[in-house]
Amino acid sequence: MANIDVFNGDADGICSLIQLRLAKPQDSALVTGIKRDINLLEKVKPSVGDAVTVLDISMQKNHADLQRILSAGARVFYADHHNPGEIIEHPALETHIDTSPSICTALIVDRYLNGQFHLWAITAAFGDNLTSLASKLASEQGLDAEETSVLQQLGIYLNYNGYGASLDDLFFHPADLYQACVKHHTPFDFITQNSIIFETLRKGYHRDIDSARAQKTFHETDAVAALRLPDEKWARRVSGVFSNQLSNEHPDRAHLIMTEKEGGDYLVSIRAPLSQLEGADEVAGRFKTGGGRKGAAGINSLKEEEIPLLIDLMEQRYG
Image (cartoon, rainbow, N blue to C red; front, top):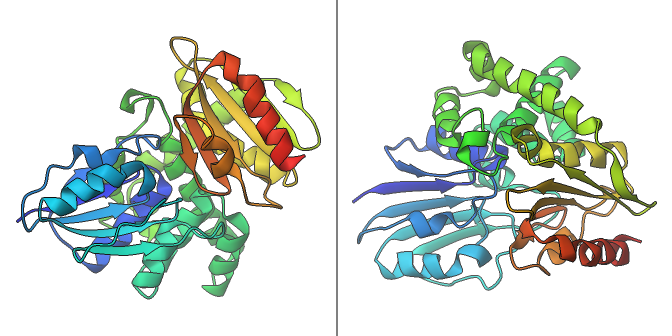
């Protein structure tokens, strides 16, 4: 019998698995990828009795493969905060799903583990742009402003590393980043003993953010702002975290970041206004390759001629 850990390659997926494996160590095959690689269960080929852990990927997008895995005789632990669609019921499936806009998968796992590795959950919450909640949790833990800032930076950098059109765009493979982090019971220990990783991500993040800030919006109203980024590695890496940063700076406005892809289509990051964390998944879901959660969603491939429809849907939803 084998153990298989399947997790989103962003801060939330990584920090979710860190907590579980610190609490319940085991040798596992790791299945992950870039943040947008959400159909991860198609890569899982289980045998009878295998134990599969699934973290921070949509059940709705993996419905058929989840059924296949269960039919093969595997046991599945599934934790997530995305829209699950129809939740499968099966005696070998344990689900922990909460789609509240003020939660992430790592906080669901934190709740499941009764807060054993709470600092990693706070780090993930910062990475998922749940800034107010993460700050509150940090304060409740007795962290000072500097310690809280360190967790926020790490969460943002772990999240930033997951964005890209392929693994070649990333500074570190998410599986390698997880394996470096899981050796440490706290994020502070990780940073102290892995300064090269932390500094690589820090420098890359700030360099890419500066490049993004040099771009101009092509649509801007009180309700929605949208801008294009070029087909370059830095743009693919920064799209999601730059969306988060714009949301923090303009909490009453929704944001679209559209990054050009080879061939002319766009990779889209959608952020609902922080003042009303609703509807991003609904807008994204109107497009074939769209999905996500209420406050933050994305479209993996948007055609040029679909841009007016996307802008119109955003204005209708948030205007």
